[in-house]
Length: 463
Image 1 (cartoon, one colour):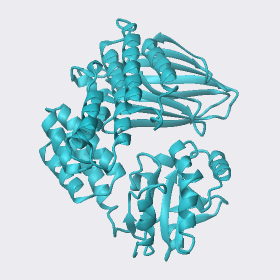
Image 2 (image 1 turned 135 degrees about the horizontal axis):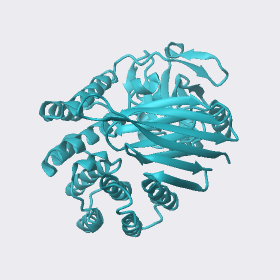
Image 3 (image 1 turned 90 degrees about the horizontal axis):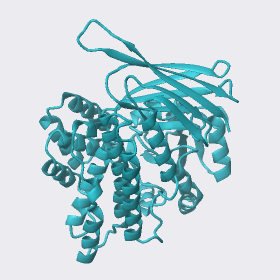
Image 4 (image 1 turned 30 degrees about the vertical axis):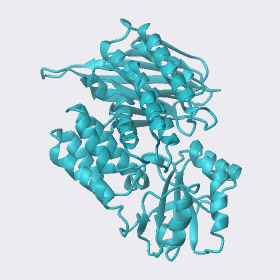
């Protein structure tokens, strides 16, 4: 296991204006990997994707990053490219922090000004890594949710020990993150429990009971907007409440959007609406309902940044509507050959965006994908095209071999940050796409191989 020593120090610079500009210098040393490629991400605004990104190569194990001037708290992520096990993720950093981190992948030590909030986050991450996956269907829903409630209370008690040791802003954000993360897991469990059948009154009573949890009552201050998870949780909670109110499982984008509008006052309303709309843009097609919601939000919000952000996403999504030309990529295949979209003209493509580190992606490979291919074996013009979002080609090729994935294999330039991912608004994986025989988009958000809808979508495609 490699040992990492990260030294984070914030250096102050003052300009001629009434406000000071502050920057951060992040330096460190990597032992055992003198030629490591490191990546730094600094999230200045989670809702608007305001992210500073930098990449460096170490020189004799040493590296240095300089973050542009910033004024408010944000999250930083530091990782070795191609090695997802060696990273620090979603660590809070404030102007003025001077933190030293000794990280060996197992035991991590933090010291210096601002280090207390990192100690708390690191310890909570270790707790979350045990037993907080998606609910196993063999575990009762109420038992799982009670377990999450206990975890929320435990995390908040732990956080109280840091009161006075960290800033009020950091305390509020960490509190919101703890509640938001664990309550979001609960909302996921409820969604997983929904069926297409009618939800009886007894089940509704249980759902409402599980949604209510006294620890999650927070004063919705401006600091909440900086929380990674809390706004996401409020959006998901509204979706769950909307479904429970119906007589059966029903996902209506306009109905959910209007419920958000009626449930929250601005500025929280704008933040939750933005989170819901950006999520829908990334995971669904541009339906009539979603189109209406986006245009309504653009017309009503008084937040100029939110309006510009969603308008850009909206324009990108319109380019992905059925019948629009697909992005004519030129990517490298697993043998090093350059392959373009035009090479598949006359074929129906089922495109799978994945990565070696994505467990849900690889779970589909092992059972669902082979079964789907067997059903489609007589349809010779249907091609399974796998596009990896990996940074590490060795990890990509190893995963293909391990999972025995049959199909055409390509790797995207610059992974999730590359032009291909940006064009198709790939914010999360796995993600699936159907491209017609004419090179035009059939479905920009197709279902997984494990969903029986996928088989019929492919055999019934007329393009």
